[in-house]
Amino acid sequence: MTGEVYWAAFVPSAIAMAATPGANQLLALRNGLRHGPVRAIGATLGRFTAFALMVAAVAGGVGALLVASQLAFSVLKWGGVAYLTWLGIRTILTAGRAGQTGAHAPVPDGEPGRKAPLRRLARQEFVVAAANPKALILFTVFLPQFVTAGGRQHIAEPILIVGAAYIAVEFCCACGYATLGGRLGLNGIRESARRWLDRGTGVAMLGLAGWLATENA
Image (tube, rainbow, N blue to C red):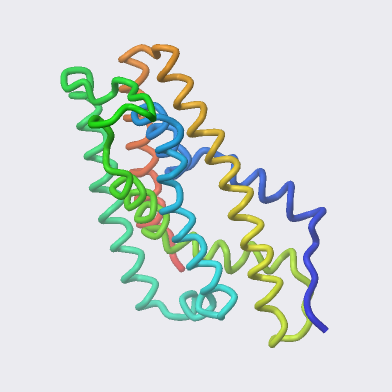
């Protein structure tokens, strides 16, 4: 007998988790403001590639192995701390120069020649998501709560299903953040507000780095 998913409990829990502002969602908001909603949404494919790999790892039992291996967790953890700290500081510092360089001027999605490379934006989304090994552990703990036990050999399929459903929910929330950022850009948000948004994104990344540094597996 295969496992089943408790959809009535999963959907509101997934929405609450996905809608909570975090480093990736603030990054989508910032990219929507700076580069337009279409490019910001396209960039989130980097994040969801990381999430898909995590879900596959959980379904295959790798998440449980990571929890059990202190060395593997520590390597991923401190690599993530280093990257998120660097990215957070860089985001805060460049926010102070944005008004002088014009980097925050809203760029219409159809206007050529002034866009940041989509590959770079997607890579940033991917690394911010993948740099947090706690996300893999969160999936390891969160997803199985909504799956009935149908035998060890039958648990992978429902885990993949509920994982794909969570990615779909977070994608919808990410579209909302990116669209909001695009609207703020089109409505001529003040330069000071743009700088504060950049700084808030940087602070969120530093906060995630600090949380990772002080948490145990």
